[in-house]
Image (tube, rainbow, N blue to C red; front, side, top):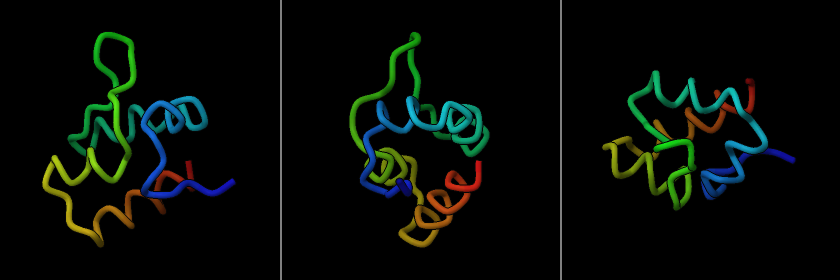
Length: 65
């Protein structure tokens, strides 16, 4: 199943564990104290100032992990 921008962080971490380090390198912390941050990849990326096209690129890159 492909990754979408609306995937919950919890599901993303479960399905693609390598996404934690990938997102951290991009300045997006998706795990705090060992627990996933609530919300979606889209919401978290918006909070960090990513544009719509940058979010689409994140999704595409995560699918390649």
